[in-house]
Amino acid sequence: MTLEAVLSRIDETLPDSCERLMELMRIPSISTDPAFDADCAQAANWLVQELKSLGFSASSRPTPGHPMVLGRHAGPGRHILFYGHYDVQPVDPLELWERDPFEPQIEETPKGRVIRGRGAGDDKGQLMTFLEACRAWKDVHGTLPGNLTIFFEGEEESGSPSLIPFLKENREELAADLALICDTCMFADEVPAIVTMLRGLAKIEFTIRAANKDLHSGMFGGVAINPIRVITKILGGLQDDQGRVTLPGFYDDVAELPEAVAAQWQGLGFDHAAFLGGVGLTTPAGEVDRTPLEQIWSRPTAEINGIWGGYTGAGFKTVLPAEASAKVSFRLVSEQDPDKILASFKAWIEAQLPPDCELVWTAPNGSPAAVMEITDPAFEAAREALSEEWERPAAFIGSGGSIPVAGYFKDILGMDAMLVGFGKDDDQIHSPNEKYDLQSFHKGIRSWARVLERIAG
Ligand SMILES: [Zn+2]
Image 1 (tube, helix red, strand yellow):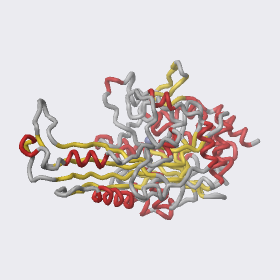
Image 2 (cartoon, rainbow, N blue to C red; image 1 turned 180 degrees about the vertical axis):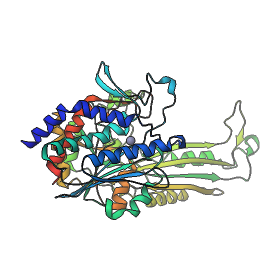
Image 3 (cartoon, helix red, strand yellow; image 1 turned 45 degrees about the vertical axis):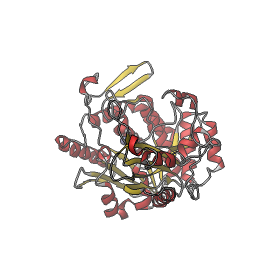
Image 4 (cartoon, helix red, strand yellow; image 1 turned 180 degrees about the horizontal axis):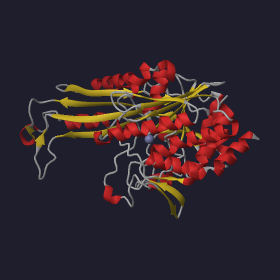
C-alpha cells in the first residue's frame, strides 16, 4: 500500500527529479584537472545541501584531493551504506559533442528519451536514482527509510587516491552491514542485474637473458641459445589443449559456481556469437568445458599481454638476441591469492629454464577477486525487487573487469557490496555525448524504492 504510494509519488515528481539531476550535471566536476577543483568542491556542497534537505545529517569531508560527502540517517534495522561518485571524466574532444557537455537536456531519440550531458550515466544520474527514491519515500512516510549512510566520492575518475586512507580513518562511521553501489550497467536493455563477482588481477613482467650481447645468427646460430625461442616455448605451454591454465595449483582455490547462479546465467540467454562477433571473432577460446559467460565472469585466466625481443625494425637483421621479455597477467576468481599465483608462475618458469639463461622479474602486482556473500537475504530480496520493477527476472552476474571500491569495502570495512546499476552499454560514458536513458533514471528510482521497502528497516 505505502509502496504503491511511494511509486506513484516517484512518477508524479519525475520532472522535478530530472531538474535536480540536471542542476548537479551543470557543475563541471572533472576530478583529474586541477582547473576544476572549485567545481568539485561545489558539487560536493550541492550534494551536502541535497542530503540535508532530505533530512540526513551531512557534511563534506576534506581529503588531500577532492572532498568526500557523507550523509547519515540513524534509524531501525540493518545499517546500509550507499556509494556513488560525483566526479566526472574530462570532456575532450569537445568538438565531437553535439551540445555543451555541462548544459544537459532531455532529448528525444529513436530509442526513447535520454538525459544528455557529462555525468548523466557515470555517475550523477545513477547516484541521484537513490536520493530521489529517498525523497519520494520521505514525502510519503514522513521519514527516511531504515538506517542509512550515504557516501559520495569525488575522485573515482582519477584513480581514487584518497579512498583507501579515508576508509581506514573513518572505519567506524563507514563500516555498515551492507553496501549498495550504483555505478554499473544492466545485463542488457531492460534486463536488470546485480553484480556479485568481480575478478581480481595479478601481473608481472620478466626478461630472459642468455648471451652477453646480441649475436650474428650466421656465426652463432644453432650453437647459441635464443631467449625468444625459450620464452615462446615456455609461454606457449601456459594453456593446455582444453584451454586450462597449466600452472601447478592454479585452480586450487577456485570455487565452483553455485548451482542457482549457474541456472540464472543459463537463463540470461547470453548471445556469445554476437558478443564475439562485435570484435570480429567467432569461437570462444577459453576452457572448452565452460560456457562463454563462465569464461568471462567466474573462471580465472592467464594472458600474455606483450612479448618482445630481437630486431623488429624495418628490413631484416639476422640477429640472435641476447634477451627476450614478456608481460603476463592473470584474472583471478574466488579465493585465489595473487601472491601465491605469481609465486607459482615464477617457479614454473624457473623449472623450465635451459642452461645459460637468467631470469629478471619486475613489477609484480595484484589484487584478489571480490565475491559477495549472496546468502545474505538482502541479495535475494533485491533481486526480487528488481525483477518486479523491470518485469524480467534479474540475475546475479559477474564482471570480468574490476570495480575497486567493492574490494576495498570488503577488505577494509569487512562489508559485502551489492552492485546495482541502471546504465546501458550505449551510454557513452567517458566519451562525447554521454547520456542516461530517462527510463533508466525513472525505473532506477522506482527500483530503489522497491529494494528499500524490502531491505531497510
Ligand atoms: Zn563511474
